[in-house]
Length: 170
Image (cartoon, rainbow, N blue to C red; front, side, top):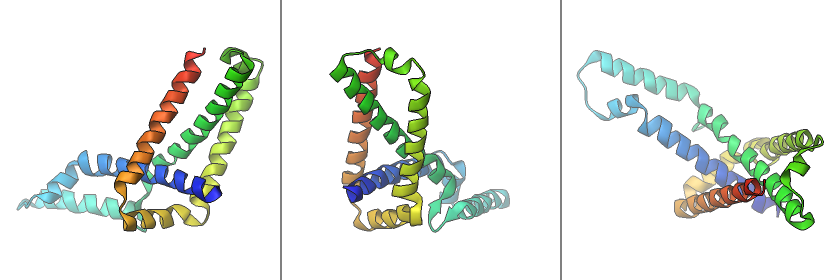
């Protein structure tokens, strides 16, 4: 079960990272688009070379670190989703309102629990021994992108549906 959870978290982390990198560093980056064209202008060549130096400076074994740290929010959202599932089950089983759960100081304890879960999930499943780099290499080698992104999209849909059900019970 632990290996399956580890793979699930790494698939979500991989998809988030690849989407962030593709959108922000490829699609919205004018230096990338300038590098595709052949320019005889010295200033534009300097801009393109500076952009490549910045990209190489932020890389660590093929992974661009600023987007890697932004993608770490995905496992934290999954931990939040699991806590919301527990709250939703508690609400449905015991037929109480969400506000009575969040009142009486339980909200702060719930936030602390989510923070601790997010930290340990990141540490155990992703960062310990650079597991995510091994999974990134495995995912890039297998090239089952349709499978990975379909798991990612289905996971997002289920998470949003859970959040909607939880907040609609308020």
